[in-house]
Image 1 (tube, rainbow, N blue to C red):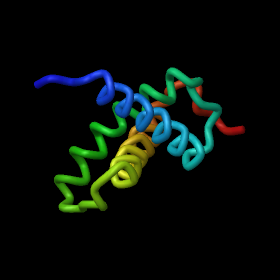
Image 2: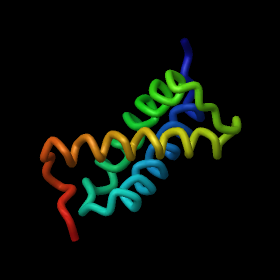
Image 3: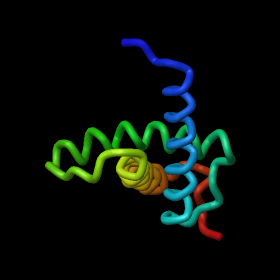
Image 4: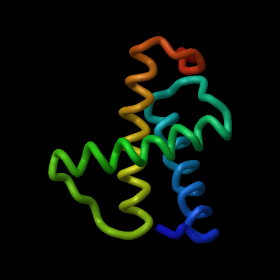
Length: 91
C-alpha cells in the first residue's frame, strides 16, 4: 500500500478536526493540538471498525470521513474518561 504525501495530510487534517469536534462533544480540558490530532486519528480507526460492525454507513467523501472519525474519537474519549485518563476532567 502506498500513501502519498497528500493522503497523509488529509489523514492528519481529518484527525485534527475529528479530535477537536470530539473534544467539544465530551467537553474536557483536552490533550492539546497534537493529542487531539492523535485522538482523532485513532478515533477514525475506531469509528471505521465500530460503524462497519454495526452496519452504519455515512455519505462518502470528506464529510463522511469527518463524521466517522468524530464518532470514533468521541467513543475513544468517553472510554478514556471512564478509565480515568488525565487531561479530560470537567471545566
